[in-house]
Image (tube, rainbow, N blue to C red; front, side):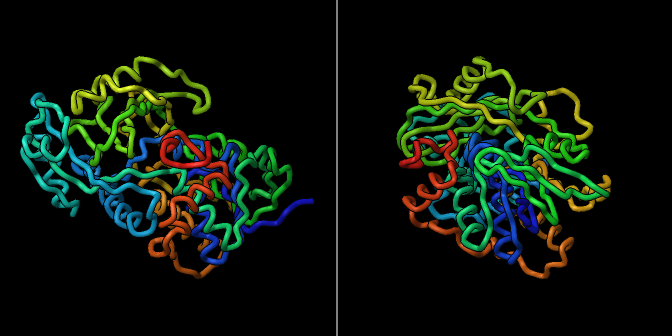
Amino acid sequence: MPTDSTVLVIGGGATGVGIARDLALRGVDVTLAERGGLSSGTSGRSHGLLHSGARYAEADRVGAEECIEENEIIRSIAGECIRDKGGMFLQLEEDDDAYFEEKRDACEEIGIQTEEISGEEAKERVPGLSDDVVRAMTVPDASIYPSRLGAANAADAEEHGATIHPHGPVEELTVEDGEITEAKLGGDVDETVEPTYVVNAGGAWAGEIADMAGVEVSMAPARGVMVSVDYDNLDPVLNRCRDPDDGDIIVPHDSEAVLGTTSVPVQDPDEYEEAQWEVEKSIEECADMLPAVGDAEVIREWWGVRPLYAPDEGEGDRRGISRGYFTLDHSDDGVDNFGSIVGGKLTTYRQMAEQMTDMVCDKLGVDADCETDSKQLPGADDPDKLDEFVARYDGQGPTDKDVVQGTH
C-alpha cells in the first residue's frame, strides 16, 4: 500500500539529513531515503575538514564567506561532532611570498581571523614541522566527524516526526502530467511513496537521480584519495599555502592524521580507478610539511568523489570548479514538484539545507522559520550518544572510523 509523505528527500549525506532535519523542525512531514547507510557517499568519505574559508579566500570570496559563517554555527551546535584545534597555512621555502600575502589580505577583508607567525614559532607550536617552513598563518579550521554529524541530524529529524530509511534506495520515479506521483523504494523498505514534493540531495549521484525523473543535472565528479596514518597528538589542521594541488592538507584526529588529496575526473561515481600513485603522491607531498608522516604506518586509505556541478566543464582536473552550491527548481524542466541541491562542501551542508528547505516551504505554502542555526544537535555533548546514533542509522564512514566507537 502506498505511503503518503509531503516531502521525499533522496540522499542521506550531510545535506540530505540536514534538509530532513530542517523540514521536520518546521513541522513538515518528511521521508528520507538513502541506499547504503547514512553518510555512505561523499560525506563519510571526505577529509573531515571544517573549513574556515581561508582555502578559498583569494579565489572565491562568496564561498569563503559561506564557510566562515557556517564554521561558526557548526562550532556552536555540533559539540563532539568536531575537534576544534585550529588550523595553520604553511609557506615553505619554495612557495610564493605573493600568494601567502594575497591569501592573508583576502582573509582579513572577509573577516576570517588570522595570525601571521614566523617559521620558528610555527615549529614551536607544532613539533615536527619541516625545517623548510619559513612562515605560517593561523586560521579557524577544525576537524569534523561526518558520521556523527549526519547521524545526529537524522536523530533530530526523526525525533520531530521524520521517517529515515538508511537502506531504502529509490529504484523508480513515476512522472505523470508534469509531477512525480510515486517513488518506489527498495532495499529494507520495499514500499511506494506518494510525495507532494521530491528533493534530490544525491550529491555526486544527483545526475542519476534526476535521470529517473527525465531531468538533466550535469555533474562533473572528481575522485580524491585520503590516507590515514598513525600520528599522535597533532593539533592544528595543516594546509600548504600554495595554489591547491595534490597532497596539501593534513587533518588531525586523536591518534591519526588524514593526508590528502588528489583530484581526478571520473565518469561514474560508483565505478572508478583507485590508483596507487594517488596514495604515494599524497603521502610524499604532505611529508614536505610534516616529514614524519612520510614514514608513518598507513592505517587505512579511501577515495571520495566530489559532487561538483558544472554543466559546461571539460575534462581537466576539475580543481577550478566552484565549490559553491546551487538550488535547482525543476519546474523549469517540466517537473513541477522536484528540486535538486548540488555542489557545495561538508562545511556548508546546513546552509545548503536551509536554502533548499526555504524553497520547498515556499512551494508548499509553509510559513516557518529555520531553527537549525541555533538549535544544538541532540547528543552533541555526549560522544557515546552520538555513536549510538551512528550505529542506529548505519552511518559509519572511513573518515572518522578511528573516532566513532562501537560501530565497527
